[in-house]
Image (cartoon, rainbow, N blue to C red; front, side, top):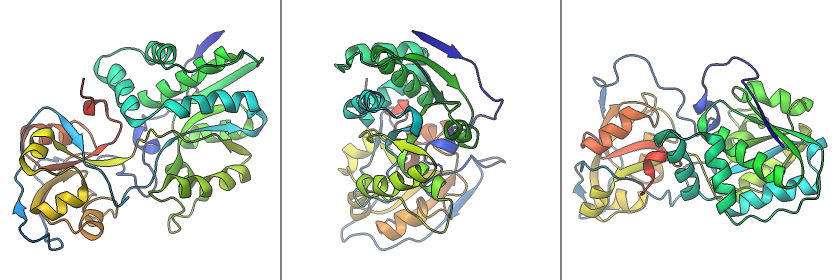
Length: 335
């Protein structure tokens, strides 16, 4: 039996407070006119025979593989109040994690954000088609919390659907950001929330100078488990699906220069035009990370937004060659 409840607390929309909001968070977009701010920089030396890779316009965006794991592993992971973490509940949530990958998450986000379907409808359809088999062995009420952005709401609806099949009476509550829902999760006001492994680990650890997450989900999860336990929480198995910072180019750019990874980009290109949030030139996960981890030369930086419409439009129109996006953005869908 399903019920839904409106927003628990009136909070400002905080998508970026969840998806990649730790050291790998691009932060909220800056203020002012983003189109007239450019920064010329000189990066590390690219590979021999490299060329100046000009932007290539095109409608299809493709994420380049972060093959040296610059970004922390923000895999989707269920977080539970310890009192709600029965074997049956964990098994149902782990069944979701077992089949949820980034390509699927992109499709779910496209269905909601671009095709304008409801999260509840999209979640129910996906669960029906996923092949997940749940034994009806549970009973009693469970409240699933969600941050107030569409991806997290869809994930909460998916959790509710599989737990409903397991025999529980589920309710989905759309709340606010992590600062709002985490106390509710700890107190047992809500029982479960979809989380992001690296960001959640860093938030629980609390010391911005002491990074505990990495690009390896096994290492990140090993750091997350004891931190969750100290907070009276349990984390289920992480999904392959990730919502983290990523660098995208157009399919036309890939066709022109033959690059599919960030390492290949650095080796093939003597310089690129990079677009992203205003703070990108100072953030270690962004321009400095590309230059120091990959040796990429950034000839010019265009100040745009954090994975939003300005950056995506600049990519598709050929204003920038490379742009910071989120790895699960519905705009990355190929269908």
